[in-house]
Amino acid sequence: MELLALLTYEVCHELEIRIPEDVKVISFSNLRTASLLSPPLTTITQPAFEIGKQAAVALFDFFKKNPEDINNQKIVLTSSLIERESTRAT
Image 1 (cartoon, rainbow, N blue to C red):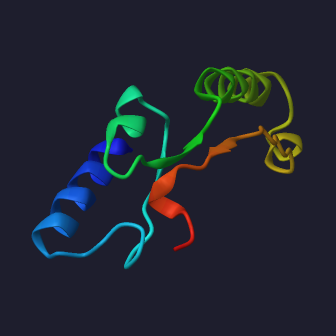
Image 2 (tube, rainbow, N blue to C red):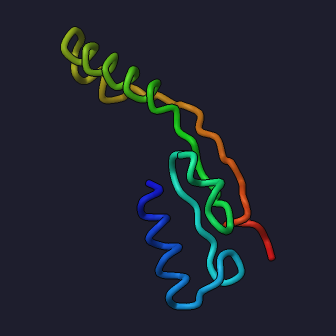
């Protein structure tokens, strides 16, 4: 969540902690503000729509099938890393 990342940037600024020299910062989601921060924020983008869709399918399957069959089900969705300066090596 980028709100927490914004707070992290604010606290680092107040404490004179340098990003990325002293601490690396990364966030989930990729809101437009990520690239506007200084330094630009590295983010992990998750397929939110697909996560919701798969969760709904799993829920409906739970009611249709034997719950024990659902407990062993694995769903893997791909996320993507958008590397920006907040995590770059110094």
